[in-house]
Length: 124
Image 1 (cartoon, helix red, strand yellow):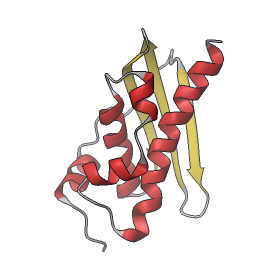
Image 2: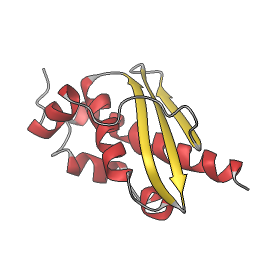
Image 3: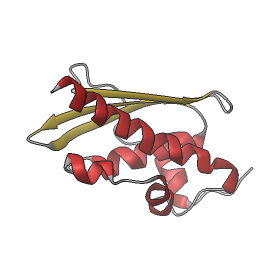
Image 4: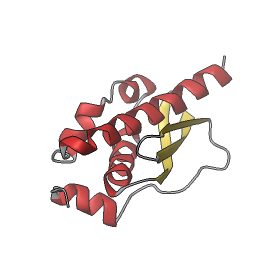
């Protein structure tokens, strides 16, 4: 069993912002066929601010914790700020991830960015 920080365990046991937004402004989906993790992020954007962020993740504990943390970090941020959230920032916020789970943190930020890009394409 890899070692997980208390924060990872907390976000895994009590993930925040789980679910979908039926009338989402943007949806981003990423998957890693190697580990089987799938993440879908939903964003609600008003006046350039991420008013709501929800996710559905099918994957390991680290993937769920990462999704929860990314959603929490992005909520209330402007589009520009949210696009600057990096995988490394997520891992740091979570108090670190085991090396073999770092790929999970990539998925979280990528799914968020894809949801925002989806919104930007739709609103053009």
